[in-house]
Amino acid sequence: MKRLVLVLLVGLGLVLPTFSEWRFDIELDVPRGIGIVSGNKVSFPEGDQEVVDFFNTYPMVIPGLSVSYAFPITESFRVGIGARAFSFIIISFGWLNSYAELDFWNLTLLGQLGGGAYFLILGPQSNFGTGRTLFPDISLWYRFGKTFRLGVGAIGVLFPDADQLGFAYYLGARWVIPLK
Image 1 (cartoon, helix red, strand yellow):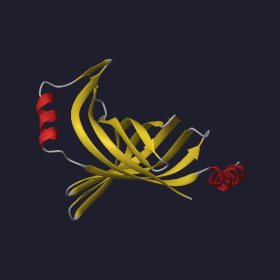
Image 2 (cartoon, one colour):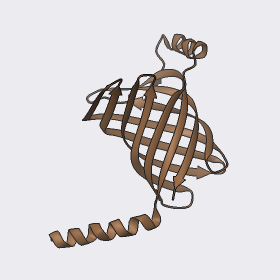
Image 3 (cartoon, helix red, strand yellow):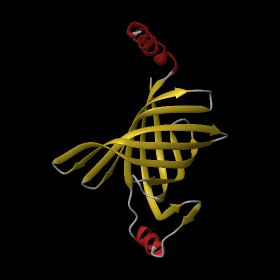
Image 4 (cartoon, rainbow, N blue to C red):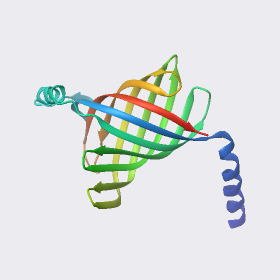
């Protein structure tokens, strides 16, 4: 049985590179506001207008990077696994990530789910850990050529045993660079 599993894993390791590719994404996201999903209801906190006013007065660009192994299922549908990271001035935070991407016309619908393991870098200190915190992200992008995209999206944070999902909605620019 162990030999069969080993042969299958080696075979899978030899076949997958034929149909997949490495991909490097660079993103610049500008948060526009916050919200909460509780049950079937999406709400915006009372102070959300203050948050929107803050983001309008002091726009912040949050850079992000992701490296993933992409598996094209069809010409217009891809899935992938990898890692994603964001940087906030002196703190960087990243996690394991998976995604599904669907192209139609010049639009790309991108759904991502990350979490499980994370890293945190704060100045000279760093931390690596695991946990049940999830980071769902859904976005819609308009493609300008093969690599550059502009779009909108929402990224959330779901903590273990929480009955609400907090999220931030954003405008963004993304460069998708296949590494063949």
